[in-house]
Length: 196
Image (tube, rainbow, N blue to C red; front, side, top):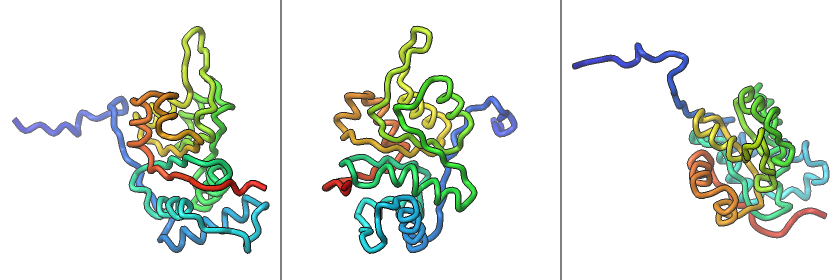
């Protein structure tokens, strides 16, 4: 029996499609990254800017995301939020993509569900600080819902967190962290804070 199943696909068919992208060569992305960092974090002078090893991993991701999002976790004060809320939106905007990350503590059910539906790229800052929402008596974790949504739709997910792997497992469970690890390239930020 030789049946072509493609003719049965319609708008209701569950289809997962990876979203590979690149913003250029590594060298081009390195220049974009540095320029965007200095434009969005005015507390850093060009002469003080340090190309940290973790920044190089983010730049590698910008040059070839391998159809994965980005998970930036680790030490405080190393630039994770600056990258998520400043650097990446500016770089995405340069290619006419809209990327508007939100803080996990500002998520509520109504606005977040609309945010998930309307955006092609999901960005969440400070994962682990989010609150469990009560939706008419049903407790819902908005970060877990976002990860599930990205798993189903293969939307690009970019997050930051100060939680380590054990803390993520404790907070969200192994099922959710396993999905997160499948969806995102992990970049660990380590070292002393640069906050003055």
